[in-house]
Length: 286
Image (spheres, rainbow, N blue to C red):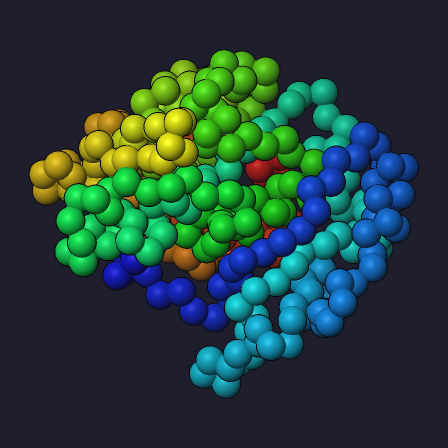
């Protein structure tokens, strides 16, 4: 991702926390809804008309161009929308779906990480980054999508888990790739060999990294203009779709288009994933 070309404004929500829920049927969905309606201390509800509850700390509200927006938020389900969640969720599906949590991407964007090297703020030592945990996800690493898909009953696997056990994807009928911009060759092979993959974000599978499980670190070895400026996609992937789709963050005309082993989206959906019922229903049905 080229941060210089992306304006992260308006309704960008980062640093999101929420409990992951799995429901076997509508009855258990309702039970869990009742159990998870207690607001966290000090949080207020922001924009109650959304598809999910959005709870924020008043201290995290800022005003940009006269519009109040939250810097951080917590998503939750709404009891009155239980039927809607059953339509867009996968609580009781015969076919199993899993999404990949992009912790490697979150790691790459850390201070003194890959992007400080790209911006010539440090040398190649910044091309090695410690692998972060899920609580460090943000806009650049699909924080909203991770939390919403968890709420809707999707299984998940982290980058590191997939790297260590690539055969895990064989247990699922559908694989959802988020903004997994940085992946290992092992991960790339597992994802591209699966026959039903939904690439939910442009710019995925872009940089090739080496994983050191003993030190819990990743190192960029190819891609994003490294080791020379002629190299963009580190895997020379034929389905590379970063330009121009990554820079459409509004997704007003979102569309999934077919490729040989699934579908790709033509925009960056971080700010519609928690608002658009049809979008979530489409993900379920693809």
